[in-house]
Amino acid sequence: MPTCPLDEYEALAAGAMDPAAFAYVAGGAGAEVTLRRNATSWADVVLRPRLMRDMAGFSTTCALPGLDLAFPCLVAPMAYQRLAHAEGEAAMARAAAAQGAGIVLSCQTSVDPEQVVVAPFWFQLYLQPDPAATRALAARALACGAAALVVTLDAPLNGIRNREIAAGFALPRGIRPVMLDALPPVPPPEGDPIAGLLARAPTWADLAALCAESPVPVLAKGVLTPEDALLAMQAGCAGVIVSNHGARVLDGLPATAHALPAIRAALPGVPVLADGGIRSGDDMLRALALGADAVLLGRPAFYALALGGAAQVSTCLRRLRDEFAVAMGLMGLRSVDEIGPECLFT
Image 1: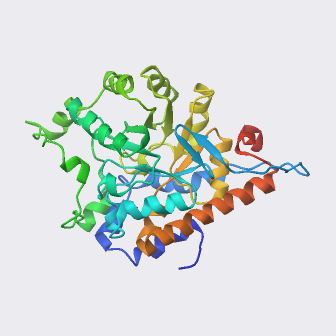
Image 2: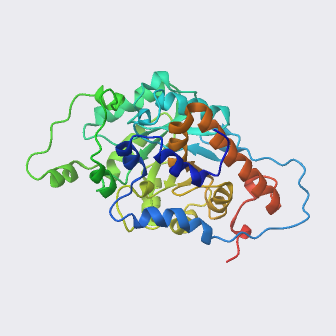
Image 3: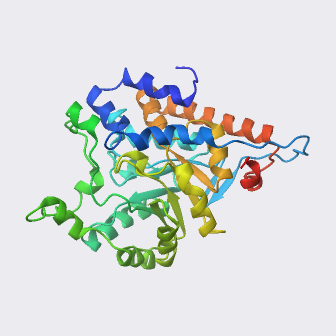
């Protein structure tokens, strides 16, 4: 399949994937207001180009904790990638490496991490009710070459995704969260299940304990307010990822583009990344101008995997990389370090 704009992948994948699996991936929480907001908010950010600049030494490269990237993009952590392709996360990792992008491997990977990684990579996890289980997940990832841990904070409960429910999605036989399945089973909560899950939900103290033990940097994912960004830093995090979980958990949240500037203002000099609705190199540049050091790409990479495995994901990422380079060049920017709020009309 030839290259195409990233926002076209969803419609193409809808015809290639199992309908229930597609609903699981594509759907958002509730009425999907936040999902639509993610997709449209970047276009409201207006770029301010400068002309006739010296562009010698032009580069899109980017350094993040433990990573040197060809451009400031990582594939976001996404569960069960074998829903898209038999090789799942292994194919995704190869494609990211081929284009100099990073990858954040989900703890809900459907392929053993030992078969996946092109080290170094980042590893996403949820704080488990048993701290020993959290340590076991982290230790396994670290043994595979994880350069940082990404702790998702914004989903102590699963969101209610109407599209997924209507489609009757269930994991097909043979696709499992292999890392979580290797842990001792957690007994279900007694009484009201929602209250029981919330009673087990992690706290800032649990995050601080992980940060204190971790031999690699820890980043907090799912942050939408400056207050929580500061609490994450107080807990010992090395950075934050501004995210509304791809609009999959709670409807009515702000788009990342709306939350990002205040968090950057609260955390000068700290790694801040963002995800949610990135569909072009122009969107990437807008995110960096609003304060991100890099972006995470989610659904388009998943759809590309469904359409053509590692080769199509590589094509997708190359398109994004080229669009970002062209946008930088036309803005008069020689390096990602030159991208900031002065690149925007306000």
